[in-house]
Amino acid sequence: MKSKFIPGAISILSILMIVYALSSGSQILNQTDVERPTVGDSNRTTKTELPEFAEKTGRVAEAYIFAAQNQDKVMYLACYCGCADMQHSGNLISHKSLKDCYVKPDGSYEPHASECKLCNDITLEARDMLMTGSSLKDVRTKIDKEYSGRGIGTNTSLPP
Image 1 (cartoon, rainbow, N blue to C red):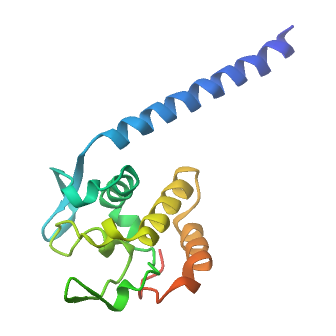
Image 2 (image 1 turned 90 degrees about the vertical axis):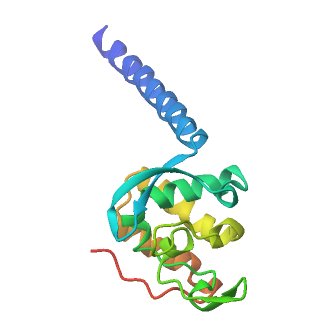
């Protein structure tokens, strides 16, 4: 009798964990307050609302939230949309990593990723991989392999 009970209990527990994880994820996506770096210190954060351009769609907002809250990770991911040497709103932008597509050096939000599907694709794929337990090195390897043929990549340091 015990042998039939244990697999059933494990199945029910697994389903409950999945439902909890999914409901927590939807709460994260519905919030607009995210932590943002304070100027001059990428480790300190303050609460702020996403700017309007970062809420263009739910998908864009998801990417901005993840990038803002995980700058220590996206700073090691290359972007392949061409932003390493691109004209944007009359200015030359020279991004060094995916982080720069979302957050400017002064800590304010960069509008570039709000209009760039490729930036969001890379960010959300990285998020999904990290959430399922992939290492940052594995994420970087997969992103480089999958996206490197799509455009000029940023000159991004490898993760430690």
